Amino acid sequence: MSDEELDAAYNVRRKAGEELFARHMERYRAESERAVDGLPGRPGIVYDEASGERLDVWGTGEGLRPVFVYLHGGYWMALSRNVSSFMARGLWEQGVATVVPDYTLAPKASLEEIVRQVRACVAWVHRHGRDHGLDPERIVVGGSSAGGHLTGMVMAGGWQEAFGLPRDVVKGAMPISGLFDIRPITRVYVNDVVGLDLERAAALSPALLPVEHRCPAVFVVAEDDGEGFLEQSRWFQPRWGAGELIVAPGRDHFDVVFDLADPESRVGAALLGLVRR
Image 1 (cartoon, rainbow, N blue to C red):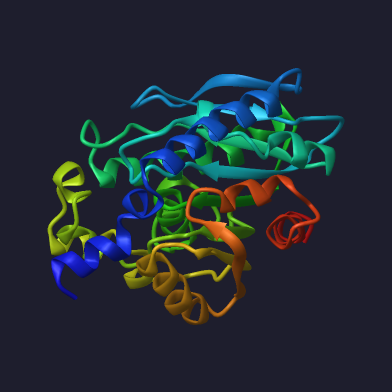
Image 2 (tube, rainbow, N blue to C red):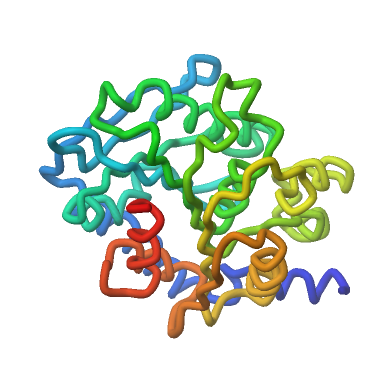
């Protein structure tokens, strides 16, 4: 593909237009604030001493609850946990807790460091979850866009031993509009901030990494997503071989995530299916 074609395939903000993009970002903030208002939980826990990054725990209850770890998007350089908890109340009503971490954004952190941090978040849930009402044996990880890529990096093998984790620590995964081969990103505007070369991009591509345990997965992509995101999910899902692909009708790259809070939607029902296995 030419550079212009790649930009059209992966520049979803330009595809949406600035007015619609701004409305989506405001909805992220407003619905996240509504979701956690009065919700039991504990925000602002440091999960990684090296970086000082924090996570929020929402929707706890009596006993241990299965936990959905949500990794926010923003092309590794934007957004935060404060605008990414919009599913927490809906999951709480279904008996599921939510963990939403921050990670250091690019260019302050390299993508290698961002990946290390989200893996450290999973390790924290496994080690300390019981102290916060989280079941360490029922961890499902999901995320949108860049968060979908980071979900893939948690699904991959070869990292768990270094964190003292079992290889099946992640019991299910839901990458949404994920990036599984990020080599094309080296040729689009995002790379001005992320600063990847082809060798590093290949080493950070879930589709090119070893797999030691194929956890159940549901791959989600919006019907009106960027063509690059659609193709990546369509290509990687059958190669993963332990899950399904949902193309969410009437959704775009930014609003598909709100289905996570709706157990009546196909996406919301699929998420509950993963956490209740």
